[in-house]
Image (cartoon, rainbow, N blue to C red; front, side, top):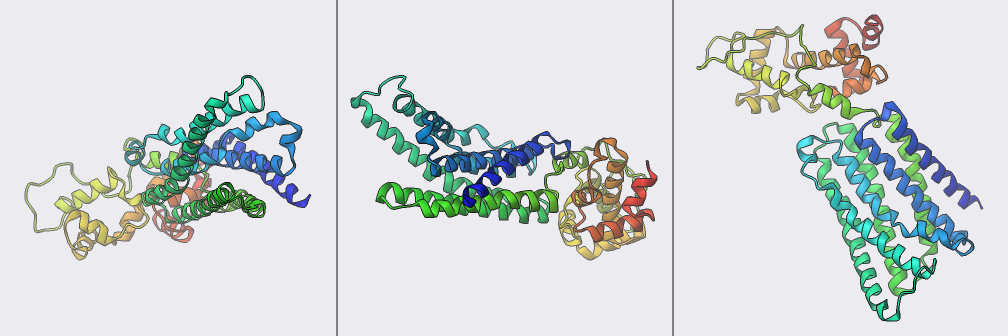
Length: 378
């Protein structure tokens, strides 16, 4: 009784949490929709398991059609789509999303077709076709061996494109937990199918672990790290050249000198290139950015890069980059579309690595904390 109650609570929480993510403006992004779909699919997997252990399918045979929909095939698909929709468009657009639904669609059609005869009695599958049905079910198992182990592995490969290190850590943990659950489920299911073993105890443990995924996603993914905020919208805002202005930053001429100038002035070719990297390519949003990375892009030494920035701006490299980050946050604060977003989310997406560095840099540049600036700009 207590066990099924825990499962029912998790099912209810998964459905409610999924609806909140889909309907709330605070969580409005394409990637978060797939997170909601993941929670829905996991909820239906647990619901079917509750029906099974409560022997509900015997009392209500037509509920078999809910179980015929192979929700388990959607779990690796939705977490994969959740990940790739949080990375840049170049990588995302190379994906053929519809292909990942083929195993789910195929398996569901095969199961429903069989139960239209076996459960509903709409028609009778002739004995001569049983061999064909068995072949179709073997293909169904083959799809399980393909998509369940390998799509999560491919997801690990795609995670490297995530920029935010904190988000990357959370997503890796979520993916690892789901991957382990799927692998154990697949191994257990196959052991029961081919060797006739009693797998009820292991399945019970797996179902209990799935309830943990529900609670953990709600607390860590949304409440603690605020990952369900609309970071996709902020990303596009930061990469929209027409939106962000830089009134307090050094202004250099648009013309690029044809030859290297020995004296370090605002016309220095490398400083010109640095300005382009910041204003047009928004390299400051990379929270791992440092002098060495930028110097490598410019083809100069890190020491010479520091000399250029110090001479022209009067500040060190870190402060120069932080000015761009602060300006990006200020633009978002002044934009009414982002009034429901937390200041910390804005800061982290603009390239700051923590709340402390964000607040310190913002006050150094503006003389105010982010909260003070937001209140004074209303």
